[in-house]
Length: 474
Image (cartoon, rainbow, N blue to C red; front, top):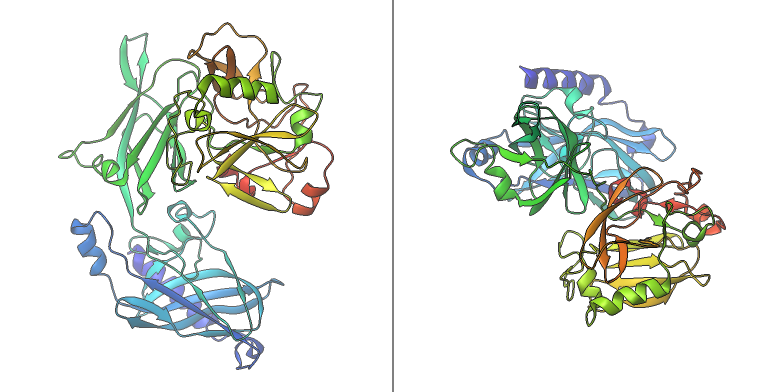
């Protein structure tokens, strides 16, 4: 019934808006470029009944798109474009557009009868988290150039228009899968374990693909298929964070009782560490501000501090402090053992107007008056020291001024924002074991976030940013 409702609503809109494009937008013009939409029906990797169901779906016949110009006016509104089947790969009839910048605002795939069979979700809609790039999607058209767009789409079966936010563009079929998960914690009053609420976040391919609160029941979680590994993090105030990496095949086993049944997570009492991915990137002014980015008893590490740490973990100091997970470093991640438990990840840098080197390098500011940086690279087993422009966005590691820990012992650090970081003692030095992710100085003053490239380069005061200005990279 829901599928019928979706189809009826969209067909009604088609009948009202199909011819609403202005002649200026669609008439032939030798100065125009063209845009094509393409997709292929990918069989899900877990096969079985779901594969049969997918292959039995109605044959796509056309796409319906709405395209907006850079000035906000519509170039095409709910335009129906014929599809051609090229041995399983579908490509649309070209649309003509004047050179310029555009965004795809709506995108649906319909069969010969006009029923919506696939759709791309809009950012903020209930299904947006299932695709890596929800609508709107930006693209450019050049003179006499064919621009090809391939957006991700989801099956519309059993869904309503509201599930997708009425949007999509060029596409690629995405097949999600479900798994079950339950979280347990020890209740001292009944002296037994019981199910509890908790926060679950899942990362894959360098981005967050799911984040929500789990109820104190067995929860069904839906994620996008197509990734090799999924990093699951379960957190709850007053408990240690639970983190595990599972392959897609392993996660799919946690759905049916005849396989492994629900994934069971047991939380331990203790400080709940803040989940840090790559941390924030700071300019030199923030790292050395006299208001201090570090809390009382801690400081930004100096060049000498880094050199002392390197001397403890040599001969391969870079490998000894690099996270071994390929999610955070590109191959070959030379020499990575993380035996020092420093958990260094390829956070990248902001260099002038561009972000570069994510999963390839991490550069940490030192507290020295000359802007030195301690550098770890994906293709080197050793660390290096380099000079950085004061406007560069780089990572920060803190060190405790005096510690009671011994080599290899762990502890915690609470930052100016209240975040709790894990710490590790290397030799006689206690370090935070993740890149810093604070937004305040010690006195409570806010460190501003600056996203504009020109404004960032012109700064002579402290600021922070996320890599690519994407907070999921923090």
